[in-house]
Amino acid sequence: MIISLVNTIHILLHFLLPVLVSFFFFPKIFWTAWALLMISMVIDLDHLFSKKIFQTGRCSIGNHILHSKEAVLTYCLLLFFPKLRLVVLGLLIHLIVDATDCIYIHWKQRFLDR
Ligand SMILES: [Zn+2]
Image 1 (cartoon, rainbow, N blue to C red):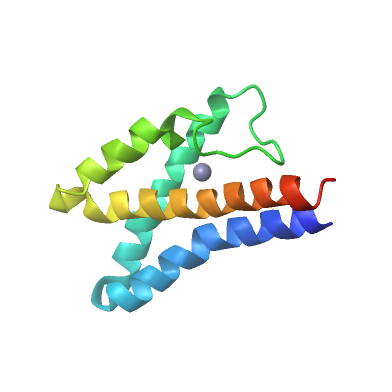
Image 2: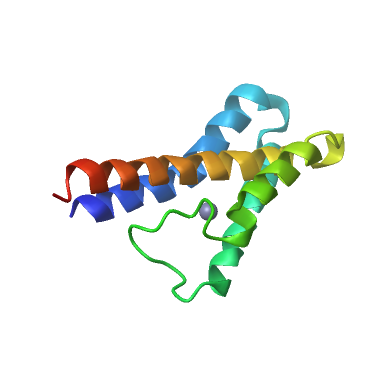
């Protein structure tokens, strides 16, 4: 039960955070900003190259090619290209949300799964 609640919150954060960022930082171009931030969700297509597309308790960061440390470095470098900035910001927001999931998985294994 607690896993499905956590998964639901995780998925909601993938949509809610771009809404909040668009609302507070790009209010004049809200829908454009939100759409560009949401395009970044395509990085989850790298799950298709895994043996299991979705696996509860698996940290995405470092386990999928577009969620790798090299990819994060590439995204940070792409921030220097103004036309790509919103999509790249979306990628980084996506990875932050995924990272919170990794922190939860680590925390759960350490304290709850004993
Ligand atoms: Zn992801």
